[in-house]
Amino acid sequence: MKLISNILNVVSSNVIGFGSSFIVGFVLPLYLSVSEFGLYKEYMLYLSFVYLFNFGYNDGVFIKYGGQDFKTIDKKAIVSEHSFVLIFQLIMFILMLIVSLVMNHTILLLFSVATLFTTVMTYHRNLLQAVGEFKLYARSNIIQTIINILTIVAVILFTTNESYIYFVIMNIITTILSYAYLEYHYYKIFGNHFSFKIRDNIKLFKVGIFILIANMSMAFIGNVGSWFVNLFFTIEDFAQYSFSNSLLNTILLIVNSVGMVFYSVIARTDNQTTLNYLKRILLIMGTIGGSIYFVLSIIITTFMDKYIPSLGILAITFLTVPYIIIIRIVIANLYKSKRSEKLYFKVMVLLVALSIIIVTLFYFITKTMEGIAMGTFITYLMWYLYSTEKEFLFLHNSIKDIFLIISHFIVFYMSSILLPLYLGFLVYIFYIIVVLYLFKKDILEIFRYIKNAK
Image (cartoon, rainbow, N blue to C red; front, side, top):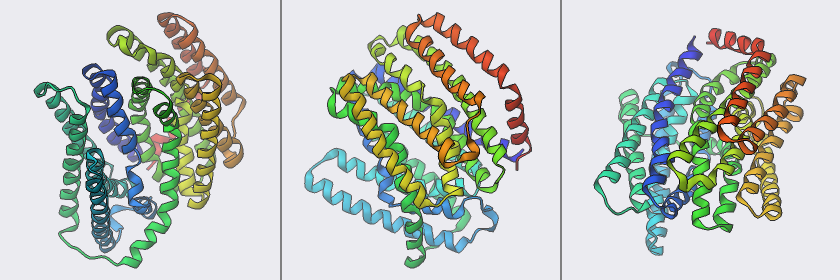
C-alpha cells in the first residue's frame, strides 16, 4: 500500500502541475504571437540543459541514497553535501554572470540566475526522491505550480506588451521561490549547520557524471527534433513543432511522477517476471494514452486554428508515447539500479549518435517537420527494441507484445492521419476496448503487485 500512497502523492502533485502545463501549452500560444511563442520555447529548449552545470553532483546524490530510509541516513553527510553544493553552484553562477556581463547578453544573464537556483533545487528533490520522501517532494511541486500559474496570469492581466521576455522572468521568479521553500524545510530538518569535506564530495561527481550525461542524452534524444527545426526552419515553424511537443510533455508529467516512485522499487526487486509485467502494463497505458491526441485535436481545431499545422506532427509524436513511458520508468531505472553507470553512459551516447543519424536522414529525405518527428519515433522504437531484446532479456517481447506494438502503430496512424477526426476517435476507442480485453489478466496481475508492494 505504501507504493500506491507514494504514487498518489507524486501523481496528485503532477496532476495539479497540469494546470501550469496547460497554461504554457494552450493559453500562452493564444496570448503570444506565433513568433513570440517560438522565442519563449527556444529559451525553454536551452533551459533543458541547465542541469549540466552541476557536473553530475546531484545525480551522484540520487544514486548514493537510492532506496535508503530517510530516518537512518547519515545527517552529517547530508549537511556536508548541502554546504558543498551551495558553494559550488555559487561559483558556477559568478563565472556565468561575468561571461553574460562581458557579452552584454540579457538572456544569458537570466539563464545564469535560473541555473543557480534550479541546480540547488534539483539537489533537494533528488535527495527527497532517493529516500522516498514523496510527500514533501509532491508538496514542493504543488507550490511551484501555484506560483507559476499566478505569475503567468499576472503578466497576462497586468501587462499590455506581448513579449516572451516577461514570461521568462516569471519562470525565474517561480524557480527562486520554489528553491526558498525547499531550503526552508531543509533547515527545519537538519538545522543551520555548515561544513563539508572536499574529498567526500568529489566522489559524488565521479559517480554522477556518467548518470548526468546519460540522462542529458535521454533529454537530447527527446529534443533532437526541436534542435533540427530550430536550425533549419523559421521561428514560426519552430513554434508549431514546439507546440506539439508541449502538449506531449504535459501528458508525460504523469509518466515522470510514476517513474520517480518506481526507481526505489526497481532497485529493491530482482523479480524479473514482475518487471516484465510492469513493462507490458506500461505498453498498454501508452496505447490508451493515444486517445488523448483526439481530445487535443478537437480543442485545437475548435479554438486554436493558427496551430492546426501542428496536428500532423502531434499525431506522429503520440506514436512514441508507449516507448517513452517504458524507457523512462523501467529501462532507465534498470540501468541505474542493475547496471553500472558507465554502461548506461556508453549506451546513451551511442543512442544520441543514432538519433542524430536517423533524424538527419529523415530530414534530408522529406525536408518536413513531420519527417523529423517520424525520425524521433523510429529512434525511440529502436531504443525500446534494443533494450528488451538485447540488453534486458527478461523484458523479451511475447507474441502478445509484438501484436500490441504493430497493431498500435497501424490503428493509431490510420485513426489520426487517414480518417476524419471523430470517426478516427471512435475507431481508436474500440481498439482500446479490444486491447483491454486481450490483456485483462496482465492488468490484474500488476495491480495485485502494486497493492501489496511496500
